[in-house]
Image 1 (cartoon, rainbow, N blue to C red):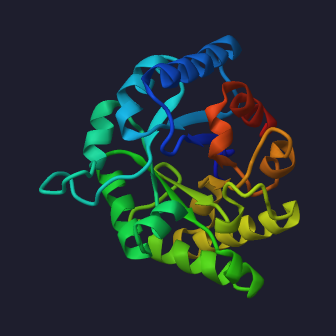
Image 2: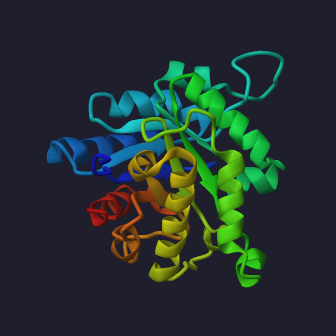
Length: 254
């Protein structure tokens, strides 16, 4: 039997934050963690590349992890403006988000590229948070389960397992919109994802992989969404920029 899945709450700061405010936010969360001692959940902060080192220093020793928002497929080379997984690891990261819908939409990233980035993350010793999710048109067309299953199959890295891979389900239409699927719909998709993982990795390994929900999660709805049977935490966007709200979301999942 797989070990119980410890909830993971990941804050995706996106393109937000300058040095002083980022340090203040990270320090506030570190103090809350120290005050609890050993929270039942795991926190990871994913700031912009420019703030990774500063955030890592602010949370050092608190148990809060740091992650990148993206990485290149190569370890080094002539790739102006890109950051490798090895560079993130060197800065103190232990996670990296790959395949976020904003990367897929804004930069034309497809499943093949997402898989390559996830494999680069694993090779650098990082844990990959692999994002999948359907568009509004796909949902209205009744293609939600087929879409997420296809993205999962094509994006999951070789060597994926509970120790190095997290899956994040984020309906594209729910991100930043204030809209969310119903609790029943979220559980249905998460259970379907776990079933697809079981086909590929076996029941025990799939049972240990954490599947996060993301898309307009806030303190008011967190408990209803993050305590579902196959939801193991959240990938939080805008709400992660407020320490009190983010901490409230984290406390809601246990």
